[in-house]
Length: 219
Image (cartoon, rainbow, N blue to C red; front, top):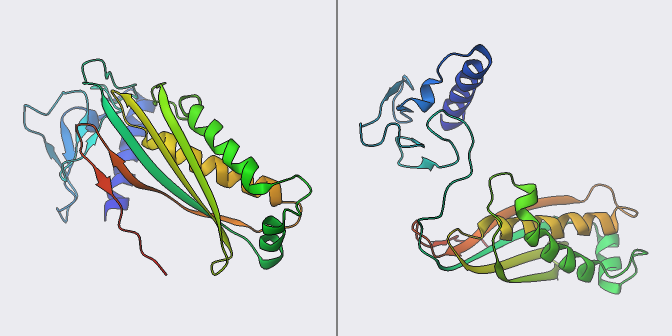
């Protein structure tokens, strides 16, 4: 139900943008996910027009202004605090590729070392790739890559920290994704059907939205 609800909102918003009509989703209306009719209903006056859309499940779309247009959130009034985030990704390979990675037999060089450096670079370049991310001063980036023989995969974990007014979740995710893409690039000469999968946020700390910890399913 949620997917179709979001699709309906997106279609109405795009239609409004093309025709010049007022986009209702940005005018203090919300979608009721728990309603069989999926109808829109007004928000309370305190929430409507506050520069972001609040859904019935209490989540904020902070990257939309009161005209329904994308904007970079102003974090100038937020207090500085220590922020951390951990993200992970996985690259599934075949047995031949796995053996070449482990032995260092790839013609391009040491796959894991190059991917590790690429992940650090990706974290630092995040605001150039993700439009609404703020450029931030990162304290540190820690990329860990290991081979999982049972899964026949490269397991990637990225940890990022900063002292600032906004979190580093996107930096951690970009670091893990960049490292995974680099593994693919380093190995594509011997295997084209590798799969990059399970890109996910593992945890985050700091900020007004509180901490998050994913419960990983093992096995």
